[in-house]
Amino acid sequence: MFGMFRREERLGTGEVLGRLMHLLSQQETSKYCPHCDKQVVALRPGTSRGRQLVLTCLTLGLWGIAWAVDAFRRPGWRCRDCDARLG
Image (cartoon, rainbow, N blue to C red; front, side, top):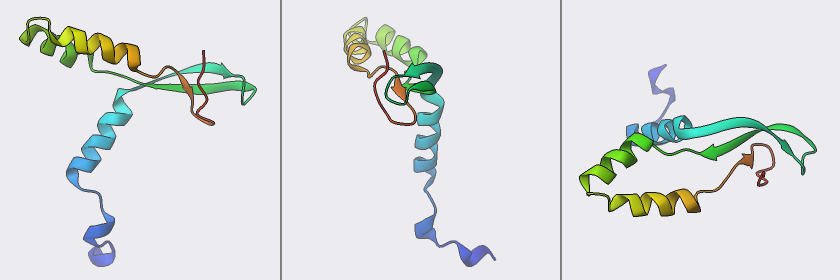
């Protein structure tokens, strides 16, 4: 019974934690998608504000520049069904 899953078919610990953190960091809301022509769940990648704030304090404000650039470049809301950009 325990031998039915080979090692190659299972995810490693780092991979599982990475995927879990990715799912937890996403933000979601409900928005209208003109491409799907209906109200859909909209997703956008989140950011760990606590980690960013700690890094900014530790680097005496220098990390704040990288934080601002990252916030500007981060993609906005996207439709979960068709991945179209939502306004």
